[in-house]
Image (tube, rainbow, N blue to C red; front, side, top):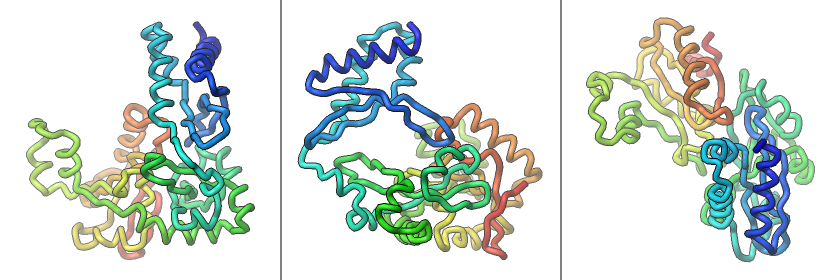
Length: 298
């Protein structure tokens, strides 16, 4: 069964399982130019349904050839993530309702050229700062709405207005979280006995920088005074490894012999470990404490 037929089978299966609703596909542009087929529910009333991206389910189907199980999984995703109740959808994009929840994130500039045609942004080195609305944690499970050009036109706001609001809100709503690499590894690998002793000795001085929700945490780099916290910890400047849009790794410059090796490592990790939509950049940056600025390391 080819992918086109697979999508039709999923569509028919959902129409049978949700007889009161109509389904359709919508191509959705995600981060880094990735386009996915989103299965959306055409509905009226107070219920809000999730968009289910079926692309990865096709890979699962190719391995199992079990359409019924795939439909069961998609049905469960829809039912588990449907928001019931008296939902005021208009309030999700009303400026007065959302102005205190506008924040920002960092994405790759070149890889998102198409997306940036339709959203307000500010360029930062070879990255772009874009803006989004955090929506209610309980009902929407830390959901977000990307702010596009039609929003700021409707609001009568400029990019500068939104940027100022986002940079005031973000440190309060998404608090900076700095952990040593040792703390991070211990949390990820509880009970692991094969971690190098010298790494866990506290002498490595490598840090993971994100926010307290680990969501688009690389943007914490731009918070006021965050980088200055490292000044008394390390000697010299700090290299910044963009491990994903969600976090970066900080390494004292004294530990790095060749910048090119850092870049090679970042590229390898991006190719083998990081989902395409989570890649931030393929090279290192450096923070100069004297100048208090970030530049590309190469």
